[in-house]
Length: 261
Image (cartoon, rainbow, N blue to C red; front, side, top):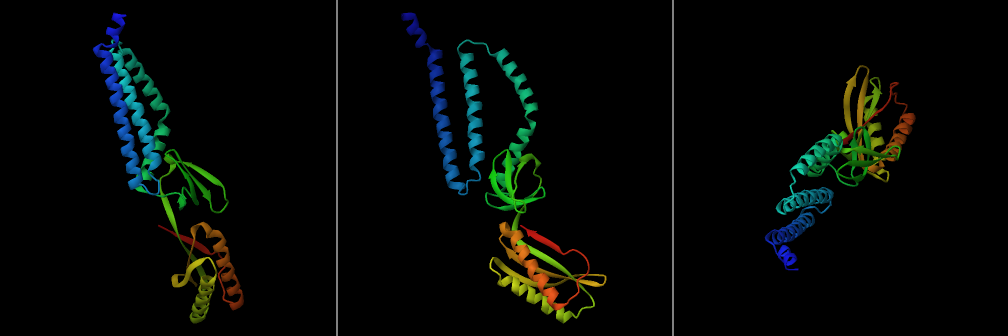
């Protein structure tokens, strides 16, 4: 009984208990500091997932080191264990390269504030609303099809937050009366601007001259999430006015382009 009591009260055991207690206290303080930072500097919660992942990673690393230190302090040789962990870590690292790339890009997206939940963005040719974001992947709901598109963060090279400005480049024959065409374009822009859902619309003037035709620009603004319904309504005004006026449009497709932030 006396030997058991001596063993319990030995220096190594007491030191081990002190290390464990100190680790709990320090990690608790670390968690509170991170949570305070989130509440103070992350009102839209963009950093929250990143910092919570960082907390879990730090805790795993710290407890691994503490356990190895305790084993060594109490007479257990961990040299072979360290060697084994090193080999296993190298294998896991090679197997999880893509995962690490996703996480690194996720950190970049959050730290650079590239976009946030609810933004309408263009990523890898997809234009949609951001409905989910983690350090591993980003999900957008395609504006045109409604499909939910999941993109691995490592595959994201460029992003654009759509601001809702769209240009209609309308070619008109150079034989038409300039004053008549200008009045027509202003009329179209006025009708579009008066439609509910459009924030503004204006005739910008002649954009370019291409051979026997002039390119006239009409620019409208609307919610990016409503791009296609609003675009179709704008095109209806363009079509009806061209039909009524008899203004000739060369046989080519209209060019509709968007402005991105």
